[in-house]
Image 1: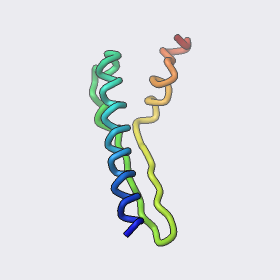
Image 2: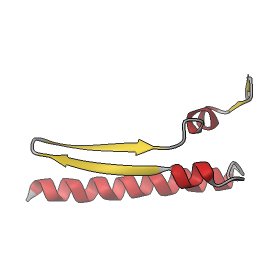
Image 3: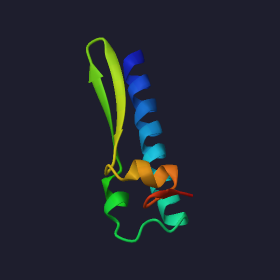
Length: 74
């Protein structure tokens, strides 16, 4: 029973992180091709003794997040 509540809360957290990440892309006008926006996903995985959460996006999303533009960091 308790495991189900934890999983539900992690699902809510995952949805929140994905929606805020997408919102930030749009707000900062970094969403021109929509490829990065659409690639942001999360997954909650339940195993017998643990629950994990992972987030995925296009590889260049890490550079966008860090403010890198070409060879220079802003």
